[in-house]
Amino acid sequence: MKFGVYPAYIGGRDIVGDDPQYVHTVTARSLIEDTFTGLRLKQDLDRGLVDPGTAGDSVVGACVVADEEMAALALESAARAADEWRRVPLARRLEIGRRIGERLLQHREPLVEILVAEGTPRSAAEGMLTGIPYTSWSPETLEWCAEQLEFRRRDGDREMILRRIPDGVVCINPPQNAATVNALNGLTALLAGNTVVVRAPRGVALSCMYAMREVVAPVLEEMGAPAGTVNAFCGPPALETWLASEHVDDVLYFGGSKKGLEFEADAVAAGKKPVLELAGNDCCVVWHDADLDAAVETITQFFLNSGQICNVPNQVVAHPAIADELIERLVVATREIKPGYPDDPEVVLTPVLGIDWFYGCLGEALARGAKLVHGGRRLEVDGTPSETGFFVEPSIVRVEGLRDARSFSVVRDETFFPLLPVIVPEAGASDEDLLEEVLAFVNSNAYGLRNSVWTQDAPTADRFLEGVTNAGNLKINDSHSGFLPFLPNQGGPGLTGGAFGEASHPMLRTTRLQAVSILRPATDKEPTS
Image (cartoon, rainbow, N blue to C red):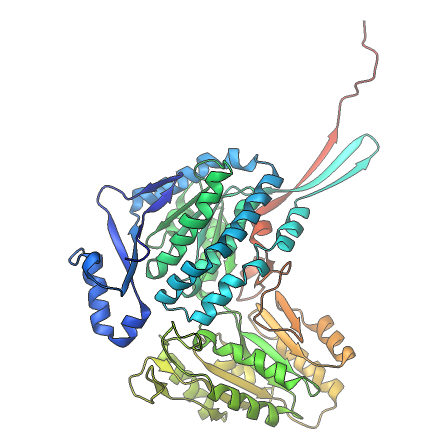
């Protein structure tokens, strides 16, 4: 196995347990080439029926599966380290953050290889890792977050402090579709003085455990952080255990909106802070004066990972004056997007799990008057149309009118497949009236992750800037899905982040504001006899 076996990392030690069980990573290429054989191999490896050393190059690594005792020990270790860790000076914690960011880039190649083996297209995996300097680990982001942790004022002899103090033990539950990048994003909670427990999903555990064990843990150990500052293990879902534990303060939850909002209620009832990163159903508005080349480039980001990521433009509102041309350009660009193996640097599509959902959603849209302008077929890995292919052809439907568009599932709901609706408002209204209608439509979205707008007219851009209120992230003439330093890359209200949703820097979301006033005893008064 190229990357070996990763135990759990708990309390500063590698732990395998008394009767270790393992989950093996079999390359996505081998599973696509021969699904039954690949799955059977993985099953036999996990059951201990096959020696990994004889399984060939399709097996790249394995992780120990933590049992209940190990999961409980991770929480205890984090709780024991919490008091010492929060007293480590902020400057030292920031230096740790800087070193982790640098170390991630140094480990870029092996991390990319593992992500590709797990099924992430190479182009996306490279983007995730090379984007580290522009995410929550960027110096600009860490510096700004650090500035928010304390403000001081004086009023005569009184010193007043508004400070953010760490919540305590933060547990991170990253999603299956992007476990490592989201675990790393959430891990910035440790820089605010929290200790952290990370559960790596069993299906994609290797990349997550590699990042924690080969990148994060060595930096913490080199810098003298207390054992238990970060704990990581591969294991089954641990949410119920976390909510019942006296040691847990916050849980970073990633997942679908329905279950996520149910978890939010359960967490609040248990006295825990839920920090939610749920679904996205982002809107991209293309105005009549937009740079259409740039708009098409950003819209086709929707097809990354076959639409199975949350921060892509899930729906487009096209000004009627340019709608036909925009759709024509989109079709041309979309025809170039082909399926393939994840190790091919030109591939962005991945197999689609919800194919029945795709066809149900497409069928509903067409039955209600939408027009399929491209796609709609299942494909084999070589692009051949097939009734049984794992891939779905990138697809575009045209929806006429804003008024009833939200009643279409493809517009109303977050989809997790490559079906893009382009909504064309009715022609005839003035641009001023149409702009207000579009604003109302954008703000009617129940989700709140990202929105983007494309226009070269400054007053129009300013009106969108003033009027768009329902997203954690608003891009104007800038890449919809791109990450930027300083700006939060995730978070938002509504079905995206729940009742407490906002643009989210985990370093700040896992702290709480405390007010302090100090009247210090006078030291210059004469002593009384």
